Image (tube, rainbow, N blue to C red; front, top):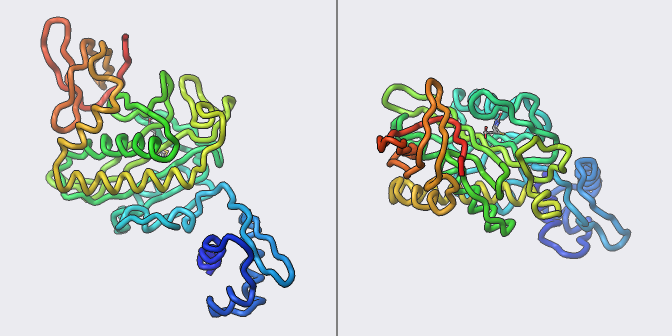
Length: 318
Ligand code: BTN
């Protein structure tokens, strides 16, 4: 009901009488008043003026599921949202939901994480109400070896959303770090539940530094607020990320991975540079030549030998 009341208030610019809202929604005026009090407790600034009615002055800076679904206009991505004020890690929750059969497109959103996971066993610093911490469940009909295209697709989608929503040109450091200038703005972690020849489901974890002040950023990272010198509407940005992921997902289904790889190259920060790549067992150095069909990085060493890297940590040398 709260969601319907909010919908009503958002559609009207001025005051709406309690009678009108109550009768349209089939509730009593007293019932409406109770819901309005609950919304106020959630942080919605709703003013009530005798003889005029209610007016929504401002929304709280929260990623409530009904804010995320409001005007989202997607077919399946973000249609179901699980929301936590604090979570251990949205990855853990999403992997669990995936095992229990959660439909493709379900998202897990947290306002903070106590055990946010980064790539390669690192920690993802997740201060409360500052960032976007999101895990998305997808169920593509692909081979496990093809899964990394979703990481690239997500990185591209984030760059497109940043451009559309915040007029920011971000870049991607292979494979999936989102960079602004020389600093890291966000990252993507992909986890799979798969059999030898079939993906059961995939969870894409996205962490973005949005409204972090300098003191809540680790060294080498930045936030949108640091960059723009003003706060950014987290819910609006999150919705645009979900829309772009869905649009690119449909594009991948229709046209194959080539079109996603082309988009990735447009935002790339790594190709053409001299790099050091630290893999699990070895490290290599050379020129980052290109991407292969699955999104692996092709590196040419000084002896001219071209090697393909599927996972690792890249350092740009120049
Ligand atoms: C990286 O190391 O760059 C990847 C970071 C991914 C962080 C996100 S935040 C939401 C989701 N939940 C997690 O615990 N990690 C991912």
